Length: 116
Image (cartoon, rainbow, N blue to C red):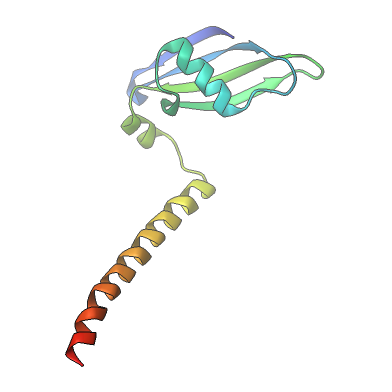
């Protein structure tokens, strides 16, 4: 992997990184590329958002673009959540509410049983 360009974007608390990567077999996944960039730049993979990985037909080389954020709060402010991410967050919140309601009902159940 070769990073060809780094562009610091201080207002968004991130660095825009672009470069090339050579690979064998299938095109590397976004997660694998994020881990490779993180090890190269000595940062956490969770702070990297892959924007694109483009390959040429029949070539084992790709160009990539990624945003490397300085902290999780900056990433949260700048990145737009996809529909799938929003649904996952809503599902976790609904599951937490359901568990809290069940715990509350279970706590009230023994009190009602003792009264009868």
